[in-house]
Amino acid sequence: MTLTSVLLSVAVAHTLLGQAPGATSPPPAAPQQEQLADPIGRTTPRATITAFMRAAGRGDYVSAARYMQVTESQRRNTERLARDLKFLMDRYFSEAVTSISDSPEGSLDDGLPIDRERVGPLTIGEAKTDIALVNVTDPQSGRVWLISSETLSQIPALRGLVARTWIERAMPQPLVRRELFGMSLAHWIAFAASFVIPFVLLMALGRVVVFLAERIAGDPARRRSLDEWYAVIRWPAIIVLTLAIQLTAMRLLGFPLVFRIGYAHVGLVAGVIALTWLVRRILTLGFARARRAVWGSDSTSTQSLMLLGERLIQVLVVVVAVMAILTIVGVNTKAALAGLGIGGIALALGAQKTVENLLGGVFLLSDRALAVGDTCSVSNRVGVVEDVTLRSVRIRTMEQTLLSVPAGILAQSNVENFATRSKILAKTILRVRYGTTAEQLGLMLTGIRRLMAESPKIETETSRVRLVDFGDRAVEIELFAYVLTVDFLEFLAVREDLLLQVVAIVESSGSGFAQPTQFIYMDRNGGVDGRARESVTYDDVGLGQPMDVRPGPLGMAPLGDHDPTGRSEADVRAPTARSDHLTALAASNVKIG
Image (cartoon, rainbow, N blue to C red):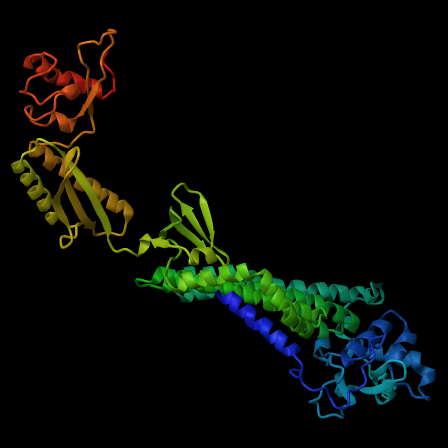
């Protein structure tokens, strides 16, 4: 049973247990009345402020008045109060809209009554005035948040304290009076400048800092490291800092609050993307430097495990960034996370192979079964491990094709890793032809043993040269030795030199290697129909036997006995005199007729 199956069983059992009678928590004694949905969005303090500014921004002061708690004495001046409040908030409301409570109950830790909320303040010169919201019951919409009448009563006095903003003082008046998409041209110019100027200054500042750091660091290696870090994090870091400066400047320069609310979503989403970009690049460079710093016998396995860990962390960073973006655009992430409890079972059922492959890759690397750069044999395919991803292991075969094996399958199969060996076996069988004398065999064995004992690349403790068998065609000598290297190319060179010297030893002993040659003997006497009789084939082993014990052709008795065909012994021995000629013909398998 795999780990995925166990997790699925636990999840299903937990779900069934939660549905069993008596397993759920008892219902509340007095269930509260269900909260009605306000059609114009006054259920939270943030929603009330945002909706009021949008209605007032498009000049719909009738709708804007529905977000205010207007008394009878203020009802005649409702439109003017809405216009002035929007004007004051555009200029002097410096609090981030995202910091306003977005809960239907409001902020419960601000020390105010539960039906009161405070946002702001409006900072006009030395005076600071909070905007108070009150939670009331609407006959049609239930509990809603409204801008309190106490705040509205202060609007006329605050309107008299208004002074020109920095943009209105610094920009030409025609640009201040002319509007584009509900905002003056002066504000549009300031908006563009708030991004371009910090961007250019940060680029120049980065260059200066790197130049001074290189001057202080005299070591060329440290200079290269600084250049590497600067090249990797320069652009994402500049974009993150530029957006932070711009969003801060927009609150201080008196941009309209509606524009700030709209652009805050865009700027924060862009900031999250740029910050994710920056974090991923820092992780990539940091893990790369950490992998280079690893050393030791298990360095390759550790580096591969770090590579997989880096990818898991980067995936986690992306998931967090996506959740943050969903929160910024207004998606209820709590409900989304709660839905994962139900969808998690379906996801696990559909992605159990993916989970199996992920765990298989982790187990392969943690068990040090293989690592990137190792030469392995998998399913009778030999190749070099190029990458270990979250799903599969990629192997470059000897044919230079890319073999991708799912990590889950690979974790359950036999993997032969050649990179873990400290020496390479050189084993072969030397086949010496028959006819080699015992003295010649002794000279060969002694010479080869001396050769292996004197070679610095051969492990002498385990090496051996032994006469092991009399085969069908040759006398067999086993050569067994470990070459002290892990480099396969070096092993090939050492083995080649060893075999060449073995050939020289065999030749110097007066013997040679057996050849897989066939000899064909044809009977001179034709049959009744004049055709040649069946041919008889002899190999080099048969020809190497003594003449008086070798069987005669065509079922004849051994040489020296009476020949039932009436041929003389000279006729029987005649083919032997032609053996050299037959040897030349045997190499091309030519049949003599």
